[in-house]
Amino acid sequence: MGAFNLPNIGFKALRQHHVTGNILRKLQAQNSSRSFVLQTNNVNFRKFSSTSITNSKILITGSLGQLGAAMAVDLRKKHGANNVIMSDVVKAPAHMKESGPFVYADILDYKNLQSLVVNYDIDTVVHFSALLSASGEHNVSEALKINVYGFHNVIELCRRYGLKLFCPSTIGAFGADSPRNPTPDVTIQRPRTIYGVSKVHMELMGEYYHHRYGLDFRSARYPGVVSALIVGGGTTDYAVDIFHHAIQYGKYCVYLTKDTRLPMIYIDDLVKGTSDFIDVPSEKLKIRTYNVAAVSFTPEEIAAEIRKFIPEFQLTYDIDPVKQKIADGWPQVLEDKNARNDWGWNHKYDLPTLCHEMFRLLGPRYGKSYV
Ligand code: AKB
Image 1 (cartoon, rainbow, N blue to C red):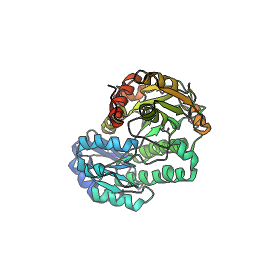
Image 2 (cartoon, rainbow, N blue to C red; image 1 turned 120 degrees about the horizontal axis):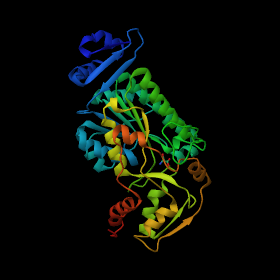
Image 3 (cartoon, rainbow, N blue to C red; image 1 turned 30 degrees about the vertical axis):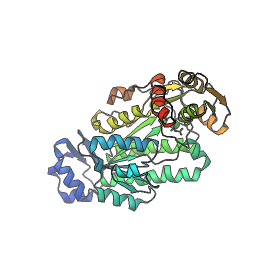
């Protein structure tokens, strides 16, 4: 394998390796911080290594979901509103459309994705489109389509155009055979949901494309995410719903047993961590898929914390067997020392501060004030 600085490689040679003119021009401009490694036979091995990110042009798929919408706000602040293209298959609320470019993108339509990359000169894809754990079990073929075939389109797109790819993974990528407390980055992964299977597939494909083609693939395994936005389709959703119900009705009926312990994270920690992770120089990453952890709690523990704001809050139980079975196979506590060491992952919110923030944000929405 030969390693070259970019100016030493003819354009023709690069075109044979599927590098397009636009990307070449961009690479020439940015060449001070990048190097290329090409295999000298006809196989299109490529290796990008970037030391700095400036003026990224980012496409976010599934950008109207819980994570996409929050990440878009951060990335637009960082890279400029017009440099972050939000996309989804549903119509955006007016305030989102006004905050920067929003386009239709169906990840099952490869040509549509190609046109977005070319028209907007995209260099980074932040890929959030996915069916979550509970909705996946209710519609396995749809989950297969979105989470597997859709991901194939996205990763091929990134390979073909030399784009950086961030795609989240999840605690759902582990299963009952994995150690549950703590769960390390590299361990047995035998999930029994289509969501988990598709995420393990995503992790392995991303790592394969990284080693095979030099694709700058990055993935973080997220815990359940707590945010003010109401979510749907997941097993950890109760940790959001409980606040809305507590404030509106003073009670909540949860579908998991009182001692079901799951890793969770507050959205602001996730957004900051993901944003840092996307920008960290590639050389710092010793692996490509990292656990990120923040807090772990049970329904009973979060209810006790909620009672500090609403002392009469009542929590009742009506177990959903599908969700309970999923949760019983997931980690209780993630081990995340590699993320902390390699790229500075750190969380700020523990259970009390997370609850404080949820009451501060949601109280006024329901005409109440707690903090
Ligand atoms: C789900 O519950 O499916 C998600 C997840 C933990 O990935 N929130």
